[in-house]
Image 1: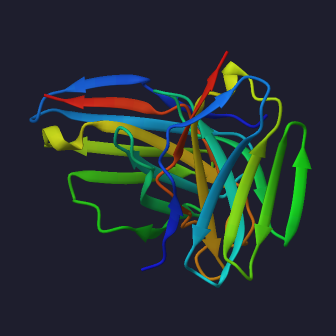
Image 2 (image 1 turned 45 degrees about the horizontal axis):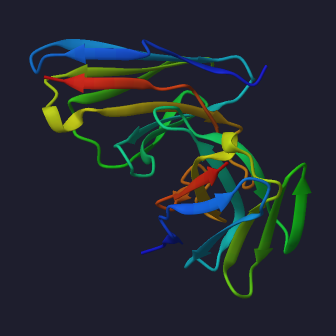
Length: 112
Length: 114
């Protein structure tokens, strides 16, 4: 079974620090990876996507992909209380568009 | 406009009721999805429509009946649901048939079955 694994947390991060979230996947054919932020009782919001090995930066967020190690990560710099949410990692295989495989999500708590 | 609109936002229904969830997008996406999400769990795919045709049904019970009247609208008809069907129902859309296409979610319908 193709799986995406995340630590469920909670990950407690002091305000202003860097939050580091990790995700591993089992499907070597997966090409695209997405990070969604979900506040309690709300729907997932796409915050980052990455297709190529290496780093991709967007504002305070950096996504990292290492296909050889089947590893995806998300860094949140200068963490704010508003970053407190659950972060879902999702992967898509080459033959399975439309079928994102979601991880269980990592809860992040930013403490003032 | 990157918005997917879902109605209603909240729904309470009895096990003998018939109700429908509605979803609309105007981003020109030709793939639309229904996901179900239980508390503290990731979203689970239910159905995918591509160019208004059902392309994926993840073995969903027949008490859930999807419908895609046109490229902008997606409905989910509910009948004889069970209390364990209570969940957040999410609609999403994307461009179909291509890898790397981003999925955009609506705000969801919080469903309670009594």
